[in-house]
Length: 317
Ligand code: ZDP
Image (cartoon, rainbow, N blue to C red; front, side, top):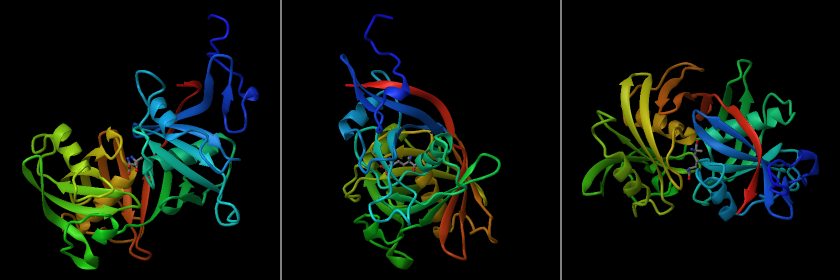
């Protein structure tokens, strides 16, 4: 290795936020995690209140050819000032295009695994996100169950301009024109917007790479939207493909999985499972998530894996 290329920097020489400058490069120390193949660059900035990287720097790190590669960059930050009693940490995330979503379901499981690997030893954490407080719980079997809060059903709050046609001013299987076709769209927010479309055959009924982006940027969703195509396999098993806002096709989307289970129950596609702890299994391209919509408190609980891949030091370009 030629001198000064700085391929490895001892972590002890890094600043608290992980960001350092050398003669040749500014670099960032990171850890890579994935939840069902939805992969993230995690940055430890627990003593900072703001992300140590800009959205542009983060987008470049997500490039799979010119840098590390990921679906997003997630920052572990200090709790909001004055709210240290209420929250353990804050989480912020940038999508791979540099846009900032409110929440990230697979990301928060990766975040919890990252905290564990950094030496935090709580059984659960209260995390401040732009979608409000989110609570991951570390299970004995290594899986993570996340209290994702309540789903937002009111169409205008998703936000969508599609006309509400169901209870709670919600949008359930409303017609929308995109790509020269008519889709039936249900709109649900988990803090971030989701457009859910039920199809008979996930492989043949959609032109994923064209329909996905057309719906993501459809004017009926003023903040753009994540797009989930869903096939009902049985009363407690759904299968989905996701086109993510700001990231394109990904192998998994946690918030989307929560949103589509709520949408499936509300559209009468499947019954609401009875009894606390009863879940719906959702098969995503990267594997399975298990979702409970709990009757007693109306909250959504998501259970799935999050795994460490590698550590590194990346050049900022
Ligand atoms: O709302 C958005 O812009 C999403 N791209 C955010 C990421 C969602 C995610 N895939 C999830 O698992 O919820 C990380």
